[in-house]
Image (tube, rainbow, N blue to C red; front, side, top):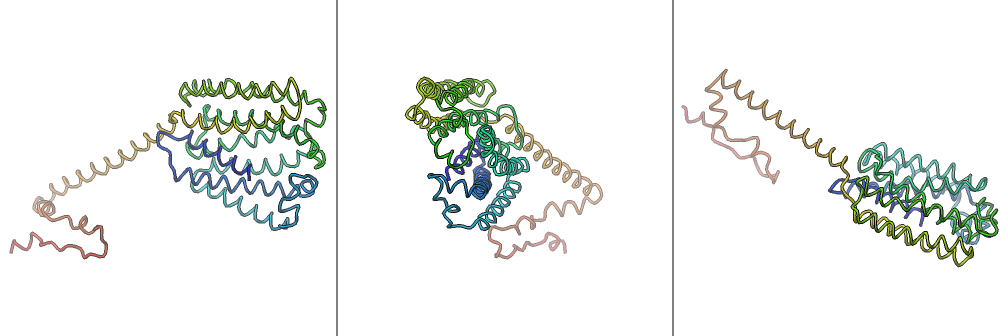
Length: 347
């Protein structure tokens, strides 16, 4: 549930950041709904593949599959259905790029990251890639393309996940070991290496606020706020480095939980409209105006031609009331107005 909520929130933030001056609320809802369906599918497949592992861990043994409340076949069928439907919804209501990112992330999470957790500690870095894709999906749904400034939030998510999950892996070492997962903290009894990985990735996030401003994604205020937030998270990681313990790891974990929503709120609050999206909107408006102007010119030329060929018929046509327009009434059940034809007065 937490995983799916995080995916939906970050994809929604990516959609807002990729929009122009006006955010399409309907498009945002369709994107979040499709993303939620794909995330639920990936999460369900993950639990289908890890039934035995989850049954050995205290924090997961009461899930529906290990507890026997739902059968694996039923869960797999539901995951396949909802994942296909979510991808189709994104393809129909957003675009193929967003649908392709969603399908790719589902495959990466369920069929690469999930089995890798039982093979090698690199699974944490692969999982960070999985978590960084949803905001790209949202941006693609809004802008129909990806650009350099679309990478700010995905980069922040990638680097944020490493201290977040390193702290979690340190706190739950016994549980992960019982479940058969390969985590970096298993080969790090002192916790020093785990702590240094956390601090290093916090430091990688420090320039992201400045990049967001220089690349035109946000105003200059965000660069200041992001630096303060990241410095606070880095201080928590530094305390973990200086004194690795359950207390310092828990402090850093709780700090990471506060950091992400604060960062996304700052991005949305100080965002600048996506220039490429605005340019595309203006271009589309110009094309529509050109088509309408072309139709008006064609009508004028047609009327001029008819006047040259039959001046008398042209005068009668101009004096005739607009029956075609009158027939399009706001109340379709009313009869069409009957006009007296000017030809009737000629006899």
